[in-house]
Length: 612
Image (tube, rainbow, N blue to C red; front, side, top):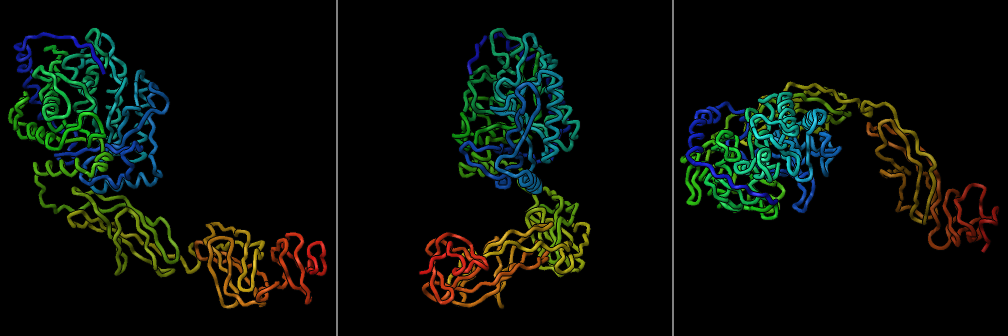
């Protein structure tokens, strides 16, 4: 993007005085209560693609376990840029499976957040109607899928400042004012203690505001710094800001020097602006206050394919050393604190898909670094007790259970279902217990287990009685098969077909019996082999349903062909032209394709059979 740069010359003495005047205010902000501190103090956030762009599609449950927070990207407008209505449909998922994977990650102690916008999802809340549509639709998406919060990733022309809107603390541009109102309304709906609000703007919308502010400069892009009023208007409920330190042009830092992407210098300079605060458009009377260190993450591409400005692991960790430990770079010295920010939140990446594509270099390397800052302590905390244990279905020998996922500080790894003296282990929030005794009462309990081996207390016992034998709770048998016929036969085999039976719970298969033999099939055809030539057989077909009920049978009698040469004529057989049969000691050749019937013996229907 190109910007007409306007040079501002201000005395550094005036700026310094402004910073000192605001120092007490910044101290208060930095030490204010945290909006939400439920995830790790050193947090790693990754965006998950709800699409496939060449990085490869992966299921949510297959995201690297090193991530603390997964941002599902993206929910997007459904009715144009200005309507405000947002929609979300899981890609390459059934709705039930997607919900299950969200719950699975949450059971591992992860937070799953829906991200709105992205490069293709521009949103402009220019009216109160659009704002209300946004609130209603976003709230519905979060509640439907059980997301833990909302990430604002408005890009492109979603945010801008009208001419004359120069005070970021009191914005007047509708798209800004309505967005702030919408975010506060959604946050209030869910409650600050349970809801995560995060933002991922580009440097153009944040740090560029130090040099240019879209509502107060002539000739510059009116989007410059447009996120600043949104950040400021929600700073008390904002969990963290993860500016995209990629796909950026050169940005002027607090040292009044340009900083370019792809190195530690850029990341330190960009983060320092947020951690120190700065005069917007270099106006000392319009100072953007610092965010708390725990509200700030570095936004990084996972590899060179993910975005411009990829930074090697070594350079990223050099930047983190400067920001967290105060190990200053030779190129840029932090302004807000020379000794570092121990509470600095962590890192974000675009994306978990590109991370996997790159053999997990990002998540593996930076997780080790972040954990090294706060070594893990022994975990003696057990998971919460599984709740809402219910029997989702049952038969005479099977009970299927489901329950609400437990939570744990290090992550739930599985569950143990106990009944009587037996137990079984599962990884999800459901279990199918088979091999039970019909018409018998069982008591089931469920315990959760975490990564450290701690077990939760048992759930409230659930008593379930299996169905009587053959009932499965369903006394209705399927209808009998109809239109049973022979479709082909030889001296040693017979092929049958029939019309499907119907049943109130569904037919699961068919059984073909003849003599002491029985063959089970799931379709409406069967071929019986190994038969004896010139032998009469009676075949009976019955249907069976999911509860074990058996239908009345349909029967047909057939004689197998003689061994070799022409075969004996029989009713119920599909004959084709030139087939040869024997009847009454004579041989006949088929003249027309047909299925034989009693009364159509070759000697009776010369239109069908020619005496050889």
